[in-house]
Image (cartoon, rainbow, N blue to C red; front, side, top):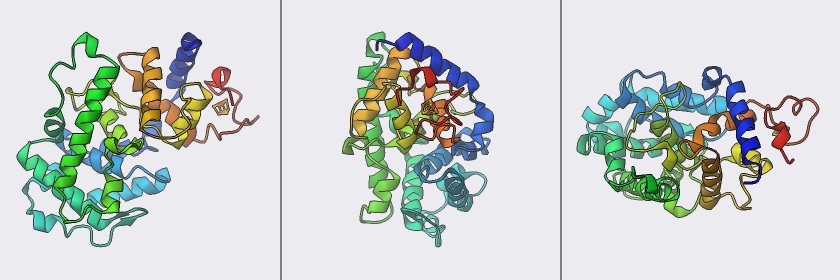
Length: 292
Ligand code: SF4
């Protein structure tokens, strides 16, 4: 990228200007930090990220309702509760595309996984080639390995669902990167597991290096990335997410997604309203690089 040093400086300023801990209360990850134990945070993170669509205030309430039936220690509950009892715990849950039966499918899949592999990371790690920490694996190859492992992770969880049929609702809740969509919520989960701990991301999976991550691209971040020249692809799909990841890796090869939270919250916090505005643009940390 021609203007990479300028863009990098502006994005660093965006991070510096973002009050991360204050914004955590307006982000789905805030619900995950309410749990103390790492194994509870891991399963709470998959529930929370899977429901991270729609308005933030509403989705944060949906996450609370989704996790409440699992009690204060969701990982323990999923490990020890008979699977036939787990499926009855969300009789009235509904949140946009997601129904209680979809959460029951997810709970059974996680219950089986925690009993068989011990953790979600162990399921993911089983498909990561052992050589991904070689320097030459950094970047593109590591991302390709990660996407393969992520797809296997999802396909295994889908196979372990409760219902015989793989429903549209469960496929939406747990999308497969191999299907070609951005899989924003799934990549958000992986970001939480890999980066940090820094008060936002949880840093629970040493097996997933930050340089392998794929951008959790949504409407907020994709628009901002277009304004900044980080995204040229017209379709908002899996290849667009990889394009942004590679361009951010040109700015920081070790940790390309460190800019994601601050960029996303420029949109969530109504700082950017996606048109030029005398009220919003002056003082915007990326104004000098914004092409809108
Ligand atoms: S300069 Fe204005 S339009 Fe561009 S990103 Fe900032 S707030 Fe949005």
